[in-house]
Image 1: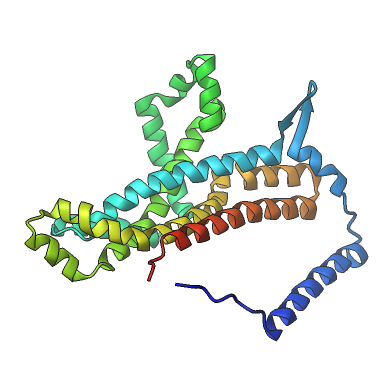
Image 2 (image 1 turned 90 degrees about the vertical axis):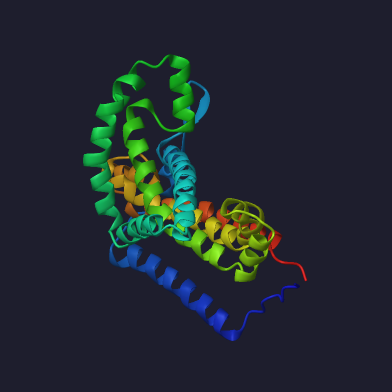
Length: 291
């Protein structure tokens, strides 16, 4: 199917002028009414630092990398949970349908910050004590410390990071559950009946007939959910995970460069989410049905 290219109309140009005018007015108000002194020259030192001749990521870039790692691991966990709960939602077993629906309704109707505190102060505390994570991380050899730092976070932040991944994964998993359920239900009933007439059991019906067709419906929203995970990860700053928003709050409190820091953080989030958005559009076009 050939896409028609969008042509801007007069309203688009009017909106662009209004947005540009609003930005200019805001900048003028800060400089003239509030006498705000801009200091953009200090921002680069918060991105990278020079340590003994080697350039290394500093606060903001470290926070960005932590946000990316959080989002990737949380999305992987959410995908596993969402697929399992999504299959349970269309199961023939009334028990599993009730379990998955209860999970979805509880998580989707609970404020994410409440879920974070429950996970951090109850689930994480018990899990950490039961698995002895703190002592295990401290007693790891140096080479394993390096691997953990690259794949997850600093060893001192490992417990908080795992808590954040679990919390964010469970939260996003509820939405992926509905995506999977909707994708499976989008397959025509005749496909189930035809595969049943060929002697396929329920598992083979899903694996060989239904899921390959449902993937074309499921994958594009999954890409959008990854973008949502990136944005939702900012709320994990309340449990001191050193992701991008937390690092911005710390810098703002110590430097008072409110607008410079938050503008930089906004652009970093925008760069990350726009890149994922372009990738999701490419995936969506690749999975389109061809006439």
